[in-house]
Length: 483
Image (tube, rainbow, N blue to C red; front, side, top):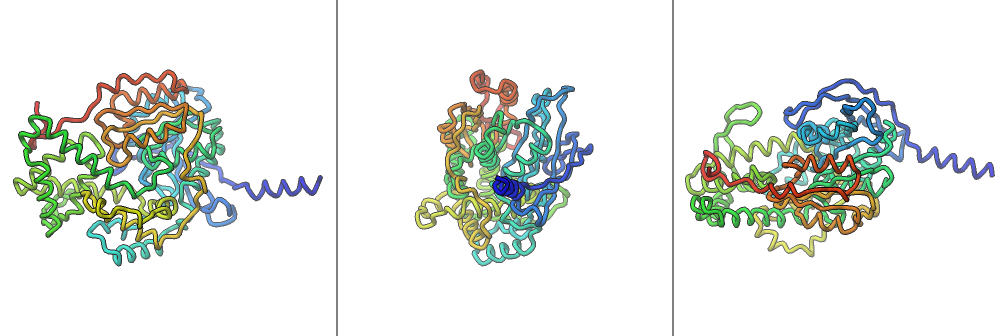
C-alpha cells in the first residue's frame, strides 16, 4: 500500500507545474496602435515554456484584471481570447472595452495575452511580416529560416493545446471558480478547446466569427473572401444610386487587377503613424489585401466600390494605396507572425492535402493561391509543436453557448456557426444582418451578451433587436453614402 501511495505521490509531483505568484499593480491597458485606454491591474506571470518540463526554461506572460464594480464580485470571471492567430487579447479588450462594460457590474474581467502574443514573450518575425509581395518559394524559405533563427522561444510550445493549459492554470492561480469565455476568430478555436479540456471550468461560452474544430486554416480563405466580394458587387448592382454611380464595377475590378498585375503603380502616400509622405509601389497583392481586410467590417466594405472606381475610371490610386499601407502597418504591429506560424504549422498545415486542392478554382479567386502556397512553404520548415489528438474533432458540451456570426463574414461565414452548433445542444446561433467578421460591438449585441452571461442560459436569449441592424450604405463619391 505504501508503495502504491508513493507511486501516486510521484505521479502527482510529475504532473504538477509550479507557478509563480502574480504581483498585480495598477496599469493602463492600451489598444492596438496605442488607441483606447482602460484602467486595470497588471502583472507578469512566470510559466514553464514547456509545461511538461517544470524545471526547464521559463517565459513571462502578461496578465490583466479589471475589477468588478460590485464590492463583492461573483466567483466567475469573464475573459476574452483574441484571434489571428497572433493577436493580443489585452489590446483587443482595450479596443472593445465599451462592448464589455455591462459585464463589469458584478464580474471581474481577467485577460491573459496568449503566449507568443502581445507582451507574453511575443514571437516576432520581421522578415516574414515584410514578405507580402509576389510569391517566391526561395524568398519565403529564406525569410522562414531567418525567423526561426531569431525567435525568442521554442515555437513547439506556442500552440492552442498549450495555451488552454495556461488559461486553466491562471484561473486556479487567481482563485476563480469558473470563467465566462469570449473568443473571436481563431480565439474561438482556443475557447472551444478550453471547453473540451476543462468543461467544469466554463460557466458560459460566447464564440464570435467561428473557426470550427474541423476546419483547417488556410484552405478556404480565398473562396470565402471571394463569396463576400461577389456579394458586394451584387448588392451594389441592385441599389439604384450605387449601380448608377458604378455601372461597370465588376469589369473595372478586372481591368484594375490586370493593370496592377502588369506593373506596380507608384503612389505618394502618408505614413499612418508618422504622417510622413513616401513613395509606395502599389502592387496587385496590396490591393487584394486591402479589399480583403476592408470587407471584414460593414463600414469599410462600403468603400470598396468607390476605391475600385476611383482607380479604374479616374486613375486615382491614392485611396487603395492609403488603405493598403494602413492595413499593412496595423497587421505588422498587431500580429506576432512567429506565434501565428507556430499555430498554423502545428494544427493546420499537417492536414493540407495539396494534391486534392482545385488549384485552378483557387487561382480564379481574387486572393489566388499565394497565401496557401506561402503557408505550405513556411510550414515545410517550421517545427511541428504540441497538438492534442482530438484538436479537430467536434466539441460536445451541454454548457450554454452563444454563437455569433456576421452575415457577410469573409473569413468565417455563418455556416461555420451552424457546424459548431450542431454538437452543442445548449447553444443558440445568432447571425447578425449585414455585418462582417466579429460582431461583439454591433448594435444591441453587447446587451444580449451581458444578459446571457448574467442569466447563464440560452433559454431567455431575446435577439429580435438584431433585425434592426444591416449593412452600411455604399459610398457613391468621396463625400460618402447618398442622403
